[in-house]
Image (cartoon, rainbow, N blue to C red; front, side):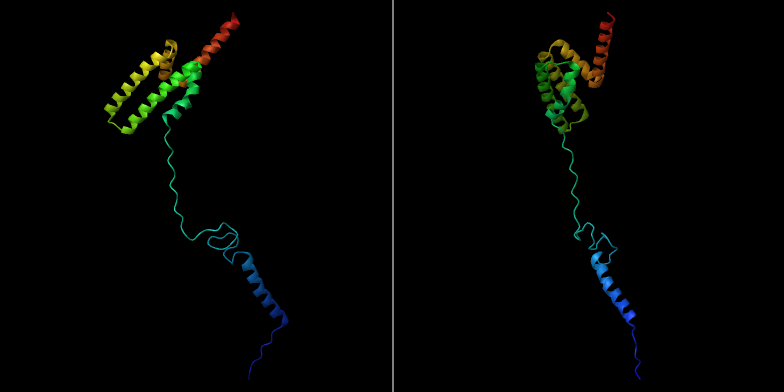
Length: 171
């Protein structure tokens, strides 16, 4: 004899609700792959390609040219030495010329003894040109600036100005 299974309408409705509801949930929330934005799934998150991407090598910073180096320092040098337009142009052109020579010498990667000799020669020629192109007091101030550095020279100039103000106020 056959066994007849009776289904109550409540059980059938619950079974249909579960089957239809689960397919709706899968459709709405990424096909069951851990919900929103799951890795490798089709969720709402950022989509990733299955093809691996090669990492672009980081670009090395390009070395500055002689012109960029000198132009970057000229405002501070001009302030420290109180140069006028003509003196500033003369100093800038001479420095650009000899900074370029130093850069070229570095590119050659000479042995240390030879490099020191080349630098000394460049410095001598630069000094001769600066003596000829600048007034004596400006040249001496530039030599002192090279020795002490721009920051110290600027500080010294500020102190001198303060002292002059104090003296003029007391008189």
